[in-house]
Length: 429
Image 1 (cartoon, one colour):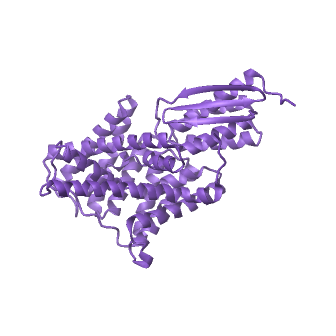
Image 2 (cartoon, helix red, strand yellow; image 1 turned 60 degrees about the vertical axis):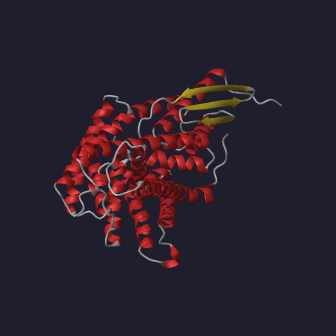
Image 3 (tube, rainbow, N blue to C red; image 1 turned 90 degrees about the vertical axis):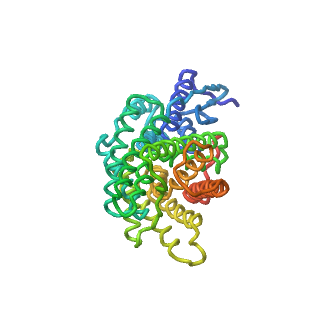
């Protein structure tokens, strides 16, 4: 007995809508597994018998099947629109409504038009100020005093506004990173020259953390863990190029100002309460940068405080030898992953909104920066420290690179662990 398929026009419309949804998710920072699962569920919810979905870093391919009819189409994803959690949350809600048969394909198209054209929840000034506050919170997590906090806040806020202006005029994304890091580096290097604060060089590292490719690197690690090797490698390379441009911008600024040995000694806060507070502020600032819907901001801040607080406790004790940075990071990320799963169920929102913002305070930006600076020095492009011979420099750069990779893997595995253990989503390809 043959199953009667959908009319060709309707099947064509379903695949176009599915491609549009996949494109929006890929453009705004969703990991590959979520893209494939969401597109599959929405397409079958609209009436297709089955959807085969394949994603890469720059394209999505879908085959729709209905009865004996099938169609295959591909759509390039040529623009990364920046991380936009509001788009991901809206599409998640739309997918749920389609599965519950509340919307037909015409209503879905109308909803997608609204999602695609929706403005950000927060204006550019509020976003820049909150990102500046988040970077300043990192300066406190690194051991800076209040003067370092204020320098970092002013520097990062200015850098955020410059970044917005450059992106508005469609400059190349890597050039935007290079120029923004250079400007931020000059301002913070002047602070080092003037000896503003107990460790003024902390502002050098903290003020550019708004540029650190935390989401692409975490998504790269998650994609690799879940078998999306091509996309994972591509995203990892993108993250490495961004980190290299951050390092080049800062190195250029340090050369211009003429600093030698500017690197600070990072010291964790004196108490769990201060650590959790500043981690929550950092997570909240990046939540605004990622355009998280206002109703979810509290959950993002709570996850940031939880993860960093757990890591602080483990690093402060020798209990069961959990005071190793990578292991403590993994346990902290696992706590964030569990909390994100519970919050997602309660608030009916995608868990990555809470998980990604919650682990941002633990992203190894300083190790990644050290790796890239080491690469530039090994290439002979910069010389911003003294007293290191070639073997020592090579060893330090390698150690920083290994720490960066291990911490990223710990973060990705930690936030994915609840899903890997309990959800086990069905394959859609």
